[in-house]
Image (cartoon, rainbow, N blue to C red):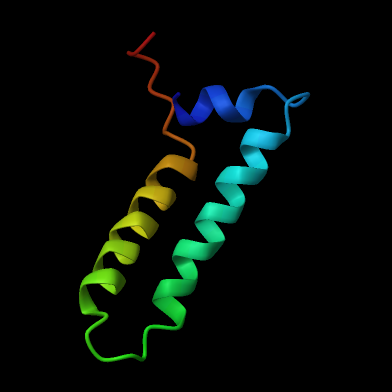
Length: 66
């Protein structure tokens, strides 16, 4: 299911809560990755953070696109 479909229905809060918990746990890998050998996990978490920023940022409204 796409991200906007999960977030558009305010009556169904459970999918949003699942996404928020998953996001919080993945971002914890970035903050708490002081263990040697965790470079791959940290890199994957950073890539996830990049995607989160892209998905949760409002797009520019272009009048040519409709």
